[in-house]
Amino acid sequence: MIAGAELAMASAYYYRGEDIFDGTLNLQPTLWLGWAFERAELAAELWGAFPLHDRQRLRPVRDEVDLTLQATIAASERLELSAGLLLSFVPADGADPFTEALVGASLDLGAGFSVEVAAAVALESETGIHVQAGPAWTGALGSAFELELAATVGGSRYRGEDAAFTELALSAALTADLGAGFAASMSALYGYSPATRRQIPAVSVALARGW
Image 1 (tube, helix red, strand yellow):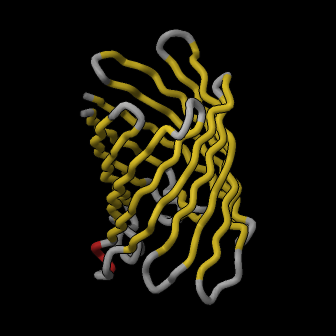
Image 2 (tube, rainbow, N blue to C red; image 1 turned 30 degrees about the horizontal axis):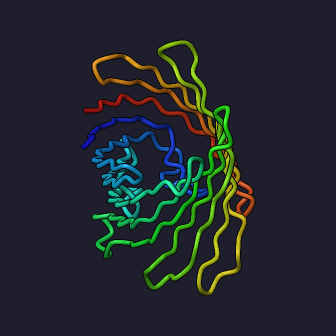
């Protein structure tokens, strides 16, 4: 079994081409548990997003808590497939949890390159699907640093709404191994929503501890 915790501070809460907290500084803590088997892995993750100011104005969306349960299997040496369930809570709005079924695939292209495709299917009254895909590259910088670069495109189709090209995002993350199970990271993201023609830059810093 593996376990870990992370605390991140972000300048925006970016989600599928939207800035949920409208540029408000926020904390994003994460707790996770994982169980690894020969060709499969089970994981449970608890994540939250909590704005640090303008909390009254953000009451309908503030203090989100998400629980994700996911299983991943190695279909081959280079291909991984995953399936899971997301339960999203926003206690302040008094609504029932929002539920999505998750499926995804990741193909290792070698030399640090990979391509990922993921889909989230809404299981509530707003039945629909969000699909996103993109390439990524991960490489070591010396013995203690790792750099990850990624690009993502995404689109949605929900009941009663036209299909929409919702996001184009570029991101970079630098992670440092601090030893004793600790890691620190800095990341930057530029998101653009063709649907709203809005640009969303965001930066974050995080400290994580694994066991």
